[in-house]
Length: 209
Image (cartoon, rainbow, N blue to C red):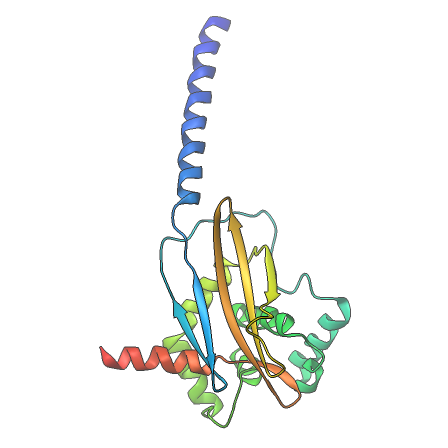
């Protein structure tokens, strides 16, 4: 009986090692990078390459809010319940990006509209939501899933100014680095995401087809 078990055990070990090697090879495949150019308070989002993104597996329910301090979570909840945008005035650019990701996941487009940079260019809320869903929601959901276990979120101090903040989410798999860049601008005494410029770019490309 022992003699029969040993060959079977050897086969199982070899099979598992082969599967593990395949998995590691897929993880290392591909790398995407992005850059952001700031000119005249507008941000151009440039994707230099697009390749297959790695699969991530975690065994707990993730939220982009888990690293927010308790007092900031309370202020965010106040914003959700009462719509008081002033609750977010003490939030850093990085924290605004984190709550933006949570709003995307919750499909809370009303509040996403509230934290979007206006600059007298935003359409009315209903038009914004319709355009966002048509042209940008799918990409934002992919970004949410891709970066939900991010390794770091940081302010690019070289590209940022007192009125413009460039925030980068980064995730690392071995020697491969993936980054997602967001631009925020100061408006009404707080940081807001320069989201509508991205939507307009997507809309323009769609209409060219």
